[in-house]
Image (cartoon, rainbow, N blue to C red):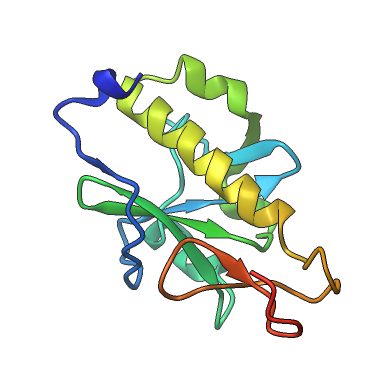
Length: 145
């Protein structure tokens, strides 16, 4: 599948930057992922700009990766139902046109799922926080990473 994304450039390196309006947001509900709905929008992730009026005042986003000049971020919170988002099985990404968006979709789902399922420390049960220098989580309570 990676060979099908040319001429797009996929960058999994951990180089977080502040989000912009055109960057994508990844929302999960169990094993399902939120995609936009509406004429010409089916099957694509919502952008920061499209959800600006629904985002909390000081939300926390987790940088996932970049595809070309657009970054993908995991949003570990829920939004109100009127945002024109529908939740779909990750199986959708197998046939999502164009192929590069399907590849980005399954990668975003995988990474967001990892962050969602590792919120608490296995040693003490404390809340894990993302490290700033690498794609990793650490427990501020007991220093487990």
